[in-house]
Amino acid sequence: MPRFALLAPALALMLAACGSNDTERAATGALGGAVIAGPPGALVGGAAGTLVD
Image (cartoon, rainbow, N blue to C red; front, side, top):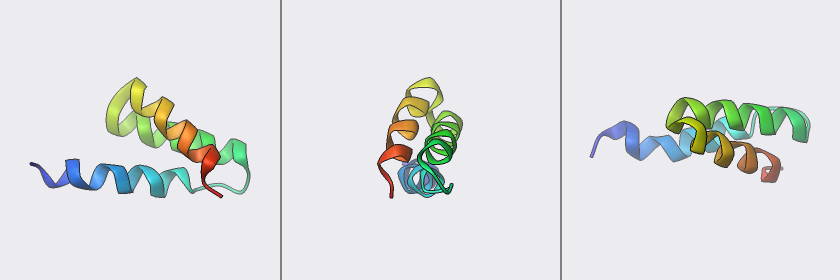
């Protein structure tokens, strides 16, 4: 298994935590998820961004 595949979830959560409010965290989470896994990743990243506090 490639190392990137192992680090991708951690990277997505770190990107989802960026921002000072829910909107910014959702946007950065969606962008990070899209880069890592395409459209499904964007949905998961956006949801994770709103949940990270």
